[in-house]
Image (cartoon, rainbow, N blue to C red; front, side):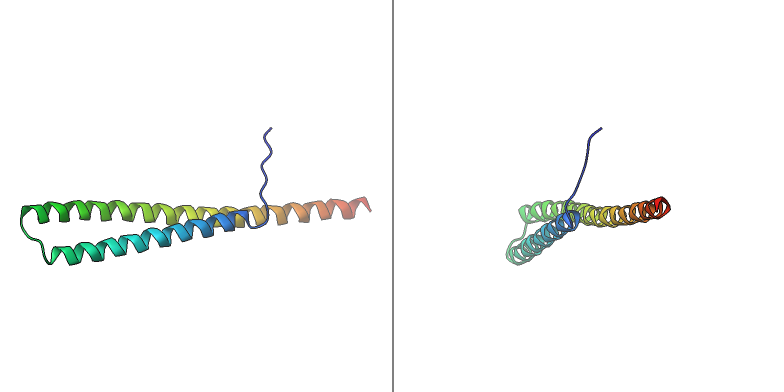
Length: 102
C-alpha cells in the first residue's frame, strides 16, 4: 500500500501558487486586450477583422484556463479542509479508545 503524506499547509501553499498563477494569467490577458484595443483603433480591413477573431478565440480559451485554475484552487482548499476534518475525527476516536484503556 502506498503511503501518502503532506506537510502542514502544503495544499494551502499549492492553492496560493495556483491563485498567483491565475492572477498572472489574468494580468497578461488584460494587457494583451489593451494592446489589441489600441491596435484596433489604427487598423482596419480584412486583416484587422481576422486578427480580432483570433484574439476573441484566444480570450475564450483564456477564460477556460482561468476557470480551470479557479476549480483547481478550490479543490486544493477543500481537500485540505477535508483532510483536517478527517484528522480531527481520527484524533477524537483515538482519544476515546485511550480513555477506555485507562
